[in-house]
Length: 375
Ligand SMILES: *Cc1c(COP(=O)(O)O)cnc(C)c1O
Image 1 (cartoon, rainbow, N blue to C red):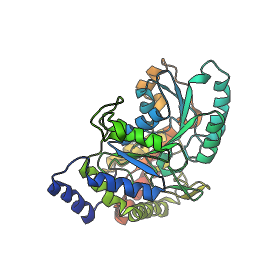
Image 2: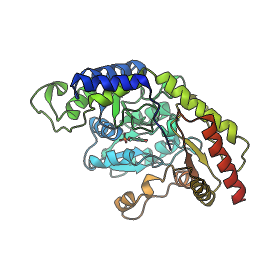
Image 3: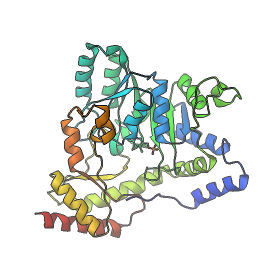
Image 4: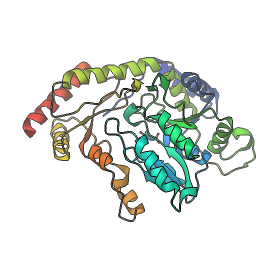
């Protein structure tokens, strides 16, 4: 489905850690964080052990606790909602925009107006928009609405390192933004993540919490708060630092694969290709997700391709329909029309920055065959 884009620079960096004998809390962590914040233009970036860990920390900094409510979208990876539940809070799923699959600011405002007059208004704490598949959510509108209701904004930018909305990098406008570096992401550290914020008090807590609650931003021997082990090891940090040195190349390679898919698939009327929204001035490609006309067509394509040895993934099965979240909703999940439609029709094709033109053509030919067989 995906493959990391690594080379000699990464091998050299990871080898240096091995030879140094210093495997955690060393110079590469600092170098990786410096490169991240310089790239993003935020004053701080705190590396952590996963994107999920980063979401947990960012929501905690936003004051989310037991019984609280966080507004987010269900058309996402389950980690988005899980981080809310870790804190004893509950997600309120707001439906998404059809074109982008991102949280709809219009529906967010409607829902907040309703909730603000309801019995749980004091429990509303934060909005957690997701930049799905690398496409920026309308963060300016979401910020404006969240401010109106006194809520924090945490961006789930785990799929969107390098994306720009109206020439502004994703992950720089919310109170904090979380990035993920799993091997299928634009930049990888193996496992890993980071939280970027301009708020120095939040960053101080992130450093404390990731390191077992140690005082003075994680540097003291005393444990002044409840913390976790969310540290990023030096091998991962070195890999990340080397990848940051190649970030433009990594993004360009993925852009190239997306352009090849577009060229090969543009004439197929039965499927919709990923579109780049008007406000997206730079798309950082995370996955290549096509939309079929129906669930039946989508499932047929997936099985047909599997029969030819080509993997695909249902991306996403909406979170609110997952067994655990159905149970949390006492078996009565609130219906979300666009989210459910997208969930039924979407299919991710194999995608990475190191796919060859030939590989893209092989997938495209198989897809053509699937559509012909379905007709
Ligand atoms: C990848 C991802 C995460 C974080 O995943 P980790 O595996 O914990 O790094 C969070 N949210 C979304 C939307 C993601 O795609």
